[in-house]
Image 1 (cartoon, helix red, strand yellow):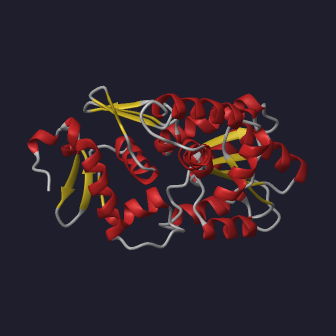
Image 2 (spheres, helix red, strand yellow):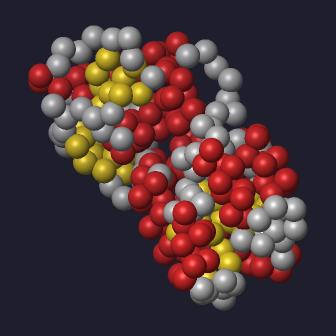
Image 3 (cartoon, helix red, strand yellow):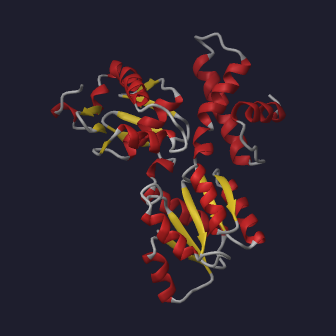
Length: 297
C-alpha cells in the first residue's frame, strides 16, 4: 500500500494535520499487519475498512496526546515543536500567555511546556493561574528558562510547575523529562503495558486481553478501560469521566458514560472479570481488582 494513500485516508478520516514522522509510519505498518493477520482468516474485510479502523484506533493515542508549547522565541518554539512531533505527540504553539489561554479554552492539553519570560505575563504567573482554576489545575507543567539560580528554580516549582528545565537543553533531556512527568501526572498518556485483575492492556498496540483471551473493544471503551486501569480504586463521577476520557471540549450527555460502561462490561463478561468495573451508588464508577468483595450493579 503506498504511503500517499494512507496519508490521504488519514487526513480525510481525522481532519488532523499529517506530519512526516517515521514513528507514525512504523506504527501504521505494524498495526495494519496485526489487523490483517488477526482478521483475514475469519472475516470478509475490504481495504478501506482496514484503513479506517487502523486510523481511528491505532493512531488514536497519538492524536489524543497534545502538548502546548508556550515560548516567545520563534526559533526555539519551532525546535520544540519538531522534537515534540518526533516523540509522537501533537504540538500546539503559543507565543504568549494570551495565545496559550485561547488554546486551553478550546481543549485542555495533555502537558504544557512553559517559558518563564513571556511578553505579556510571566510563565510563573500563568502557572499560578492555571493551578488556581479547577479546570486546568491538573495539567502537567514543565517550566523552561535560562535562569539557573536555585531561588528561581524553587520559585518556578512553587508556582505549580512539575519540573524545571534550564536552557540550553538537549532534545534527549526534553523527551526524558516529558515522559517522566507524564508517568507521574498523566499515567494514561504512557505506552507501557498495564496489567490488573487478569487484564492486560497495551496502549502501543491497542490490544486488550482478559485471562489470556483477546478482548475486542471499541475506541471509546478502550480509552475508558485505559483510564480506569491507570486510576484504579478511585471513584469518578460521570462528569469527571467525560472530562478525562472524552475531553472537556466534547459536549455529550452524562448518561453516555453509562452506555459505554455497559458495553465495556459486556466485552469483559465472557472472561468473568466484568466485576472489575463497579458502580458506586450516588457517586459514579470505580475500577477495583478487589471486586469479589463488592456487588456489581
